[in-house]
Image (cartoon, rainbow, N blue to C red; front, side, top):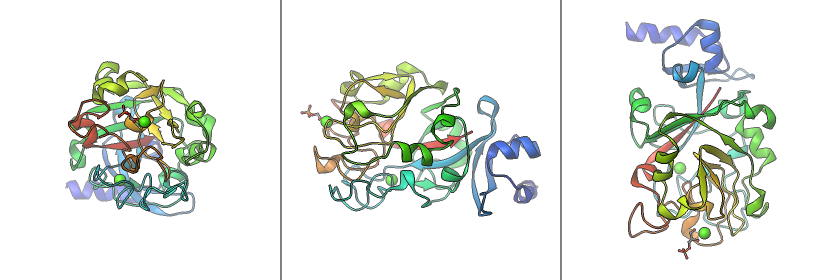
Length: 287
Ligand code: G3P
Ligand code: CA
Ligand code: CA
């Protein structure tokens, strides 16, 4: 019966989870087929329950190893080494490349056509422990929040367009040229728990309760997203994810979770983020 119910879902034609909810009355979390404006069909996870539901999973940022320095698996920064000649790295924040699967979104990077195809207003973010199966993502998440001010309208309706306006590119500007910081509404966690997920030193240079786009660090390296926080300082590589292709301070800073392990002696010490944060994939949703 479960498979029969699921097979109904393959008859829906919709560009987003919100359309599936509005058009077909679906209220159940799980995998659905979506169709792009050009007619390409793909499958992803819909969160049909948080704050009214209708959230489409469009991407996940997964860190496979903190010893990489922009090697294999660093799709949200660079898989081509820390290299000033490749300022955009792999360029996936602002291209139409896709990779991964919804079921594997906590085990490797994931990017759907929805990332560039869906025209959305708000974002939701889940930090889910690595390798968790999708039926437990919601309960297992260490942090969940969403925006509610429809900020994406101002930036072209999705991250693909936002990052065209704010390129994730080495040397595109200085620390003061970061992109928008948007207030968040917590679904699991709060400002205090957000602070504790990052290292003691970063806590002194951000304000929790926001999601920030395209921060730039002291050495002009660009990152993509500071999840849960707004930087007030410039060592953003220790608490912001994704990046361009070059981090001048140190080779080891280049990666999908750039310098989350800067103080290698221990997690949750100095600049190093908590074990929970370092071992959780960041799931990005639109609505
Ligand atoms: O990104 C953190 C790094 O710049 C900190 O430098 O000298 O305190 O290890 P240091
Ligand atoms: Ca990765
Ligand atoms: Ca630094």
